Image 1 (cartoon, helix red, strand yellow):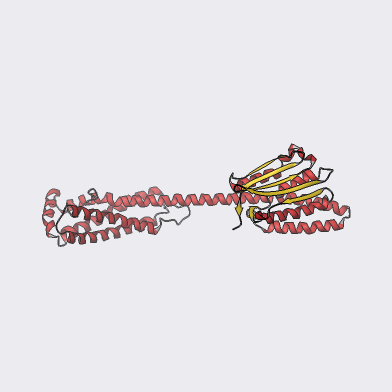
Image 2 (cartoon, rainbow, N blue to C red):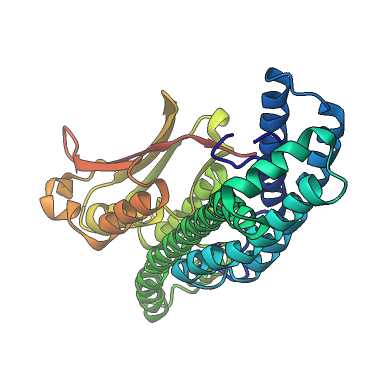
Length: 375
């Protein structure tokens, strides 16, 4: 057969409405029919059939008709993308039947009924003789074209399924981020009540002892500390310089309690001032050093905060030289667990917290996390 050839010769939504990208769908339709046109044109050229220009014009017409029919099918399937995949597949198989019948009729009419070229007159008579008339020829063509057209429907359903899977993955990722942010906020807010409790106890002691000046200084620093800590996003990273400033405020508050016992050493290079770290990540470590080291020591204690960068990671160390720091219980408190949990939530296993007694007395906690620069 020369002209009316058969092809054997050649999103359920995660967040409705969700559709296959319109551009992708249209390109798939054009590609399907371009394949038909090019394949049959090339076959006729190879077979050196006469009247190729005239046949190419007829083929262009039926190709445009095929594009139009497939586009209507696309509109129907697009409207059903919120339904189940089984429903879409069933619908695709069913709507392909009338679509195929329409296209086969147009194809037959174009090549064999409406002024057929001379080269097809003999072929028409042969087809009618072999198949028993025009109806039989149309049925034979329809069966062949059905599998060609339904292949595009299957492709579209597959694209819809892929879109659903992609949307589900994006939604799952968004939910994971939201859960992570909620976890970070919950862990962050575990810090402030504990700190407030300790500070209020200290203020109460100062008031009872009529140490008014120290109490006023503590209240002022406390107000500044909480104003700074509560106005930011608990799940956000902050510049290391801001984190250090927060710890300076906290230590100024504690210095009122331990004016003779607390000495502070800050060793943070200027080059790391803009490095990003989780907000208030040092607070539980500094508070532990005060509670377990300074508060329990009868001698002066130096509390040091150090930072350095190495191999793409930033190292933060909080340590003290209190002789009571050898107590292993310092490593199992709520504060250290809070910090470890926050690092795990924020960096998904890429950060760690290491703690233990120092040689010569005292306690050290070392945080290692990926280096994140501001901007």
